[in-house]
Image (cartoon, rainbow, N blue to C red; front, side, top):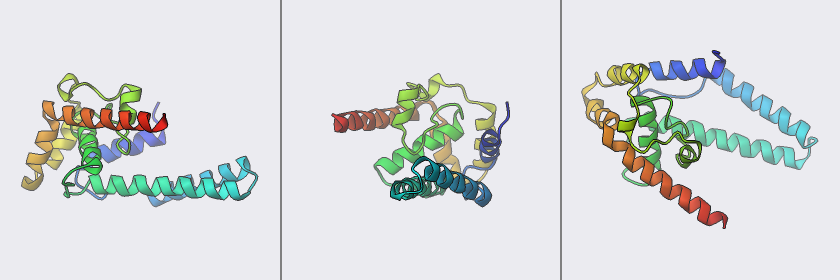
Length: 172
């Protein structure tokens, strides 16, 4: 079944990797309105509905900002944002059915979409098409080629497992 989210996702993957990646304003506004309505009805238009709506909007803003940043040429020197960027590049340059939760890579470990290595995951036609369209520019060729290579998933998995372990420890 082809639904709107799948169509938007496919169009996003058909665009070269380095591009301004933001959801269409109409989609964002529709989702925001639906969320405000849902929280208003759920929490009877009280203070909790406003808090839930503000939290949801903040999470959406973080998602959009991160998605924008990971599609730029800037490579964070280290840390969580670098892990998020690498995770998302694997999603684009190796296989769009894996590495799905780029804002929280540890979630992929929980849902089984974080493979043990990139080499265990087939390179899809969509990833190959997006990678070749992006790699035509010389400045991006080396970075994307290394992400599409087999060994890069190890670092992503190790970082995601560390984040997962840290989150589990924090919950205790």
